[in-house]
Image 1: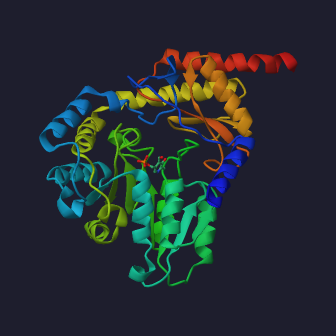
Image 2: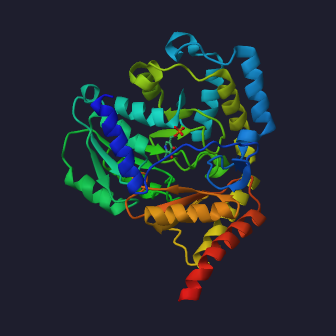
Image 3: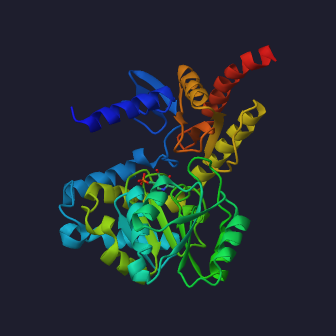
Length: 393
Ligand SMILES: Cc1ncc(COP(=O)(O)O)c(C=O)c1O
């Protein structure tokens, strides 16, 4: 056995000791509300298909139709023969939804952040090393894209526009191109960035504002267009509220052309499979008409936040369909997750490095497939947990 193999084994043992070891679980999913594991059914509060579109009949139908018409694979990257004539219409729909001149479809949200940011921060193209101001709690794929470009992130305190302003001031007068990077809705906290203030700062300081709208697209904003109106560049995914897979960048025509020429994730990767494009296309057609579903999801999340807080749980700064229950230690988060599982509810324990040390949590996500009764049931399951606590008080 090579020595490196032993190092990997030792790493896994360390993860186990610290309650941080991850593992894959076989999931059976037959509808948007429930999952089964080992024959046991659970109400699923851990998925991101906020509008329950992954089981929508017209989404499935268009995916099936495009598989039959165009095959199950694209056969090549978009620059070779993978740029099926379906793309132009779908990208026009994305650009309209995001109110930007152009859009470019990419393979996944992770890949988009990893490779689009690398291309945008290329110092050879910019003529100087860029100054990249980045929210501390930005998604791993954003940090990955920055690292890939070689740009050092200047991290501002989470959601803190005043801190961002002071860091921008520190670099006032530098002739280097400036960028500000933030998520619109933070994936593990369910709060929103102060985008109006950040947008104002970006304009005042001549910085390009790049917003990852992954958790707002489809589910928040007017007609489900997300919250990225202030941004120069929007990165989003079809894998959350739109129920499918794939990602997009919405931007200027020049930037779209630049990415086609410079973005490794687009150039060196096979284009999305036609059925996936079909699912994206059908979901984009549905999104503007889903106001009732968006209101339902918002009211479920609000009811849950109130109920959980009344039971003494820490739901952090959530204001959206994502609500954390912050447990603190890794073991506390894991045992809360198991407690809910015993009661028939599935919520994943999220631990460092996905969240900062000491803030391990359950991340609950509410979707159009959930009912009011599901929320009451979930709160009851949490209430059971609170009983021994009050008994010992
Ligand atoms: C903010 C954010 N950006 C990007 C991604 C990655 O998107 P995808 O799942 O499409 O790769 C995620 C999801 O994991 C996310 O939460």
